Length: 269
Image (cartoon, rainbow, N blue to C red):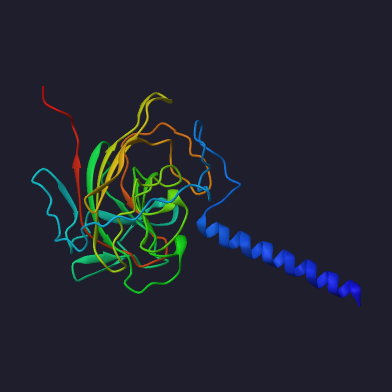
């Protein structure tokens, strides 16, 4: 009689440990690498999570300035494609209605037809009003600058997750200074200034830098991007030129409206 009891106890402990690990993964990991010079691991479960602050939600749409390129104005998706097999461009696969475009789960992301380098980018988005899932499985998308440097889009209202994976994080690298998120279903705004990395041949001579405002609140201040942003991995720079912007499909119906970009060419001296 004692052997089955011990076996059942062992199985219970194993199940409990497994359940705890799964729960921990919602808040991060303890077995990932660190970037050089950082005391934090990628998606570190122990990394402090930013405090919540109030911000401007459901603000009116910000119209692009005269020198900007409107990438989405509520109806026109002609600036975008959906990458197909092998990266071949295909027609936009997201739903477009009522002045926004919405991720269709399982139908791929979007990529701009044009390539960009140094930019100012404005993006308005909203997580689903009906809450489903938690952590990284709730209102998740992403703005992939140059296709590889991600500013995270996530429903971070009352939704604990790992610090470097919440809204406006430079994914896997830097949490935002504060959590300026709005409630699910409310419209939010990102304003991003991105300085592209510079290369001489295969050598990196200047890393990328990103500044981000979330609903008018500064959340990233000229942060050095440490490399391509990856899940649970350390990204390494590889030489490249200008590249398209991408909006990620993470199988949750995030909505976008009023997306525009300005190419930054520097001051006239």
